Every structure is written in structure tokens, then in C-alpha cells.
Image (cartoon, rainbow, N blue to C red; front, top):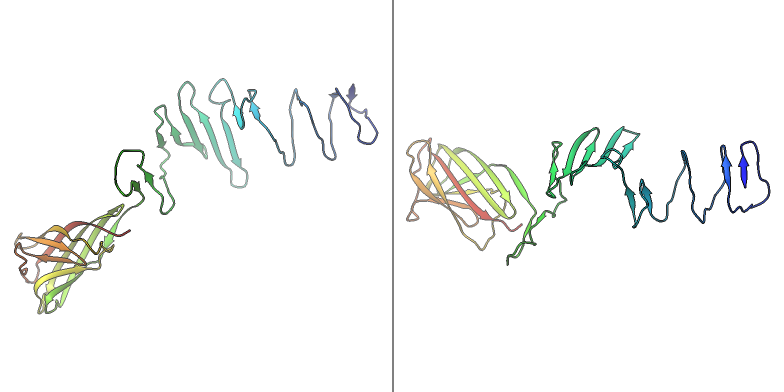
Amino acid sequence: MTIKQLGGVFGRNPTFNDVTIEGQLTFDGDIDVNSDLKVDGDLEVTGTSYLDGYVGIGVNPAATGLHLQGTDNVSSSFTITNTANSNTWKFQPQYNALQLRIFGQGSEVAQFDASNNFNLIGGGNLVVNSGQGIDFSATAGTGTSELLDDYEEGVWTPTATSQTGAITTYTSSGTYTKIGRSVTITAGVVLTDVGTAAGKMFISSLPFAPVATAVYLGVAREEAITGNNWYGRLATSIQINGATNNAITWTNSYEYVVSLTYITAV
């Protein structure tokens, strides 16, 4: 049966077996196709399309999902464009190579290469949700955790006090790097007016609280005048003292620098 342009078929709910349409076919309502629908030409759909089954472009799909097949990396790629802001993303298998190239707004941003590495080449970062990270549990080990879930670096302001007496004025600065639960800190304290300070020096206001049941050791040095070496001991605060747990030298313009690594609870 052939329906030509300017012709028509009338009746309520007509049913056809084999139909050839020459010209334009317009539906004002629903159409149900219970067999194969073949279109030799352009198919334009305005509205919502729902496909329940396999979809193949350039290939007869053999499994669930969307299948694209072409003879080069252009015809095998697919593009997503947001007309509201003109952002365009294109996923393109690299021709003659085991690669998947991802383009965003016209330039390549990432790729899976032939060695199964994921490369960020567009200048961006790999961002993970809080509490998530890189899971190394596939490697052999008996540790309590193999999830690298935190990295941070920054500055902090140490607070300095003396074992007895009080420091009148000082300046201080510090840096830290946190990898997982391991924190490496440096602290520097410059004595401008020692006041009545005596004994050991205590440094607090750490960027992260240490595990309370552990003690950590580090190195310290008077950097500005003498170059003498001291020790740093951390329990709840950093204690700077000599080899036999003795007092430091309290003199104006002395600069005490300490560095150590400790474990924080989180």
C-alpha cells in the first residue's frame, strides 16, 4: 500500500501491514510501532523520544546500551552540546589506538591512553568528595587502612610560652603538610623581648591535634645567633629543650626553629 503526498487514508484507528510513504508524514498524536521501522533519509523528532531496547548508530546493536561504530575517530565519536551556554563535550576514540579522548569546549581535557592510564591534560585537577580518596587495598598489606583520603598544606601561627616566667614579645610563623593522618610541621619563634622567661620553651596552637597517647621527637636549632642544636618533643604541645631535658638559652634576637612529624586522630 502506498500513501502519496496530498493523498490520505481516512477512518478511525486504521491498521496497515506494509506501507510506503512518498512525501511527508505528519502525526498529530501517538504512533505505536510493533515491528521494524526503517527510514531511508532524515528523521527529525520534535519532542521527547523514549527508546526501550538497544540503540545502534552505524552498527546493529548486539547488547544492551548505546553502540556507535564508524570507520574513523570522527564517525565513532559522539558530542553533547548545551545550547544555553554553548558548552560542548565530545567523546572520541583515538583512531588506530586504544585511547578515549575527551574534549570540553573545543579542547582536549582528558584521555584514557593505550596503557589504561587516565591523563588530565587540560590543566584541571582530579577532585574527590570529602572522605573519599585513592584506595590501595588491591595491594598486599595488613594495615588498618589503605585509603589515601587527605592532602593539605598551609601555614599556621605557633604560640610560644616558657616553662617559668613569661615571654614579653616574640614573633612566630609555621608551615605544615598533611598526608592522610601524617602531619609534618615546622615552627619558628624569634625572641624580641624574653621578659622573665626561663626553662624550656613550649609551642602550641598546632594545625591539627596529635594522637594523645603518643610522643613524637624532632630536631630544633637556634638559627639566628649560635647555631646550637636542640630537641623537639611533642605530646600535647612541642617542648624545646637540650639533650638532657635541660633549659634552652633565653636571649633577645634568638630564633628557635623546630621540625617534626606526628600522627593526628583524623
